[in-house]
Length: 266
Image (cartoon, rainbow, N blue to C red; front, side, top):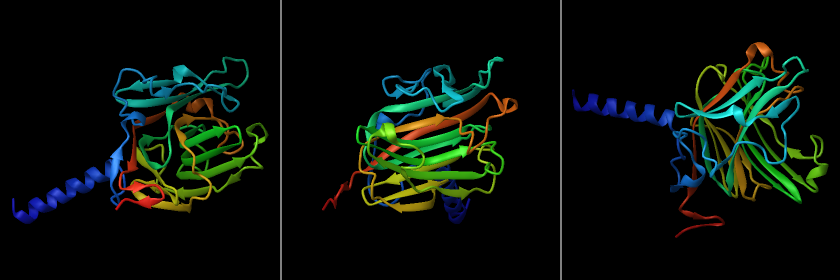
């Protein structure tokens, strides 16, 4: 093979590998945070690292979080959506996985395939405090929601006050939608966010799709991957689409090692 051909092949292989596993952007220097990352290669979810059931919330009705719907299968985190009605009215089994540790700032990435139902496939950062709540939605998908199958939804929420009084009308939110060429439940994609004290940047398949000045989000947050029901937004899940599976190949988290936030190391 000519030197040009070898170089071309090497460049092609490099491009292919980058397109599958983005990892952090090329600017800056990064360190990998193993304590909140996971390749999901164990036999079962690591409960020293993860919560597989929400500690104080049953789930968004008519969905209910179920531990049995959180599993590791063939090197993937599989979050299932199931029909649990059993002739007793509508009840949808959903799924929840959240890191026990919190992280303040960093690059957060999953490679995942959305579930093909009207329940969400979601990846987000969240912190609840007694004086307010903070959330960065990296992606929310309705894999079989009519007219939304290609939509990559992102958001950033903040609420200052007693969390018991928070509702959909009083929090500060900034929703945006990026429309993909094909349905997101058709294949695996890379979803990521780079969050620092100045800005929040969203990525889809290694492409920057959104950026927002960071005014409010300066608190450590837990990493959540889940499925939920949103009847008024994504529509009621159809039993014909269930069971459905949100498959996550990995979670990788990095932080800038060349920055002490507030100043660049010299």
